[in-house]
Image (cartoon, rainbow, N blue to C red):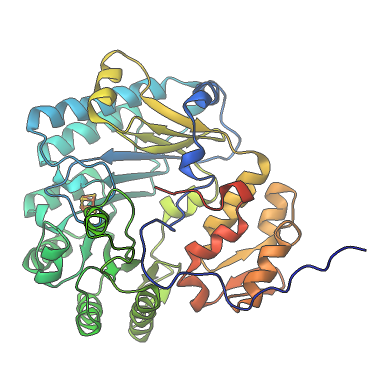
Length: 446
Ligand code: SF4
């Protein structure tokens, strides 16, 4: 006789205090499982023709910032001069040159382009033209549906905004994070509130197809009143979309270093309940003002017009040709990441070598988990879509975690749809770990 399974606790095992670490799931399997030994797999993937109907996107990583934010865990450079930046941009173009002659391109042109960082808007107009003219010469942009460009408001002059429009940027994503000067300063942000207003005004005049504003709930010194004022200000500006992230304190951040020095386990920021409450407040206010919540992090003004090609294509398994230091890509079923240090990256390309540092080829089940968890962040997925694509019905494959999360009150299955409710969406990244293979559950994400 088998031992009965223990009853599912009706509360998820979630922390309330903000402690060090990342929950945010941006890919699967976790990066700590990507290995140098698997480099031959990415080399082999590049020698194969692409699978039918797999779109191609390009990610360009710009690792420069005016200053390092205290919550930032990315490898960013605040001390590079124009000459180093030029050598970096040339290295990126060399990298792209190596890729465009490989069979995996298979005659495809990119359907989306994403400039992320770091701070892409740190580049000057002439650096931007140099980079994008070079990119277009190698992989034409005439089939591109979306060009996203991340910006730090203090770096945006009128001239630069015109340049961005001219090179074809369709979505300008403004890293506002907060509107209050004290909060911006104490969190180490380079910009101030006045620069946000100026940049946003110029950007509207220039006329981008979409402007997105990023906010972070729970920065150092955040208060309920200030958060409400931030939400009100964002609504008053009426951007096409607003992204809300909840503050995490990863390892390798200034905040964590201070916590260690002071022997503290809890970060000096709001606890998770408060951050969820603030994010929920933002979504409710946005909804009252005509926005629709379309994912765990995003509300859009007009969901019939505002699309996210980068997110949607990537989460559905598109190839991502990623260039730049430490950038993450995905080609022909294999994940890869480039060298995360500036000099080795530039030097390897100077020698004509691929700057890839580690790779991983997910198995069929891992690919299913990856797409399923990423798409669950949208709040609703179709079981049939996954059954058609992977030959496995997620309702069977994930019966246990689906039931567990349903018992916790965050999820329902209605006909073909798995739906996550608002309370679930507000903590979706933690819930997604329930779908991981056991060996991946406690892995560090960053
Ligand atoms: S602007 Fe972004 S990438 Fe640069 S230091 Fe701040 S959080 Fe990090």
